[in-house]
Length: 126
Picture 1 (cartoon, rainbow, N blue to C red):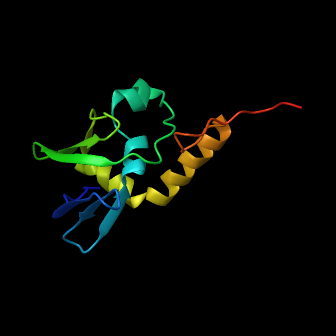
Picture 2 (cartoon, helix red, strand yellow; picture 1 turned 45 degrees about the vertical axis):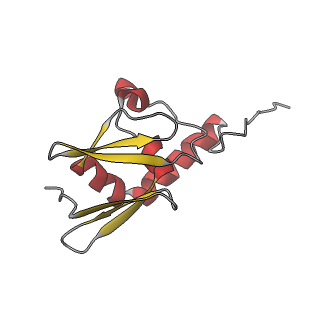
């Protein structure tokens, strides 16, 4: 299946979202935190063993650049700017956003970790 190229890309700084619109009328609004924790970078994807990203609840997108005709380079305010978000990957993130987000929340819970950068979860074994 061919993944469409967005006809519009808008960075909404106030709401910390990236909006992608498509010729078929579909659109996706992807929060910065969601994009950050699903970065295609080696730092996050871990060369086949993904590294759980924690404390990214307040992260913001500060830059969006085209990378050729096939991807976007996103820059986050935590300094992360590696990994190219291909049109295909962005479409997959948008199409599967609900499932991917829930899986992320489940992994956080299982690891005893938090989205909040100011919270450290401590497990007490009784």
